[in-house]
Image 1 (cartoon, one colour):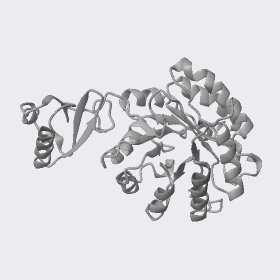
Image 2: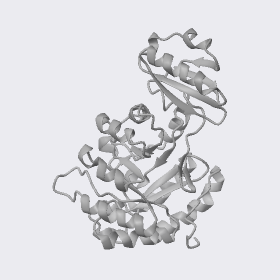
Image 3: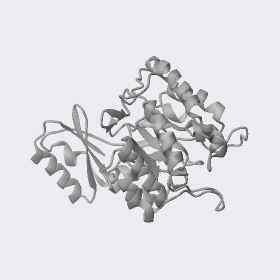
Image 4: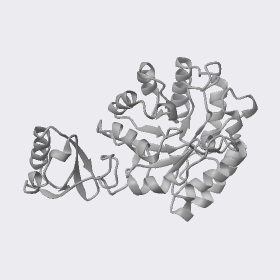
Length: 346
């Protein structure tokens, strides 16, 4: 259920509505918009009656939300959620670009890539300190040492860090370094971990599970929003199908569907989605064309010797070529490629 009130509603009226929701054994969630204030209600809302709230001061409308996911639904909030990072945004007109290597391998490798990306204008740097892998015998990341290197990149280069959390034990350490905490595909339905991450009130990048439906992804996002954290970025990264020509099947259908169903921003990871470096630029542009709010691209200065996912990584030169194409494409879909202020001209 959703209670619609005016933005200028007195605080005492808002608090009365919230108190009544609590008395009815449900939970209120304030969701401010540009013209209205919404109070979302979660819990046993089927027991509530619209008339319980319709006559309360400052209440303009009471709406039933029919989707299983409530707080992240477009019914709950019609306006797009926009997440701000200094002068940059995700979910608005700006086309967000997150780039970097799959994993932190060495200090030299990480700084080499980070410095080149900064020169190109990238502000959001992704690299994994913890790497959940299918095989226990493959490179699992530098872990705490990797976080130390990312913290140094953040301090010396001024980049924002996007990195994945593996479990509850590593969460606090990751949260101290990450500007955006990534929940990987394998953890998308690890609900206890997701709740913990949501309670930190930091931006969260939630990747779609490799066998998850769109509704599953949005229900996972609901666990974060239920902690009153709406700084959620959804990520389509490909799903497993019968097709073996590529690593995964990049489900670009999901982008317009999610745009219709949810107010949350969605980005696309074509690197994992296709798994073959020379197909990444085409799928990146297709993602932008179908309405994605941004991209996550793997970039490595020496892909042949990368310790993980080298075959799907672009070299800095290829990545710069892609940025140039995206710069031309963005205005066509009413987006803007806003790069770091010290960027070398594309």
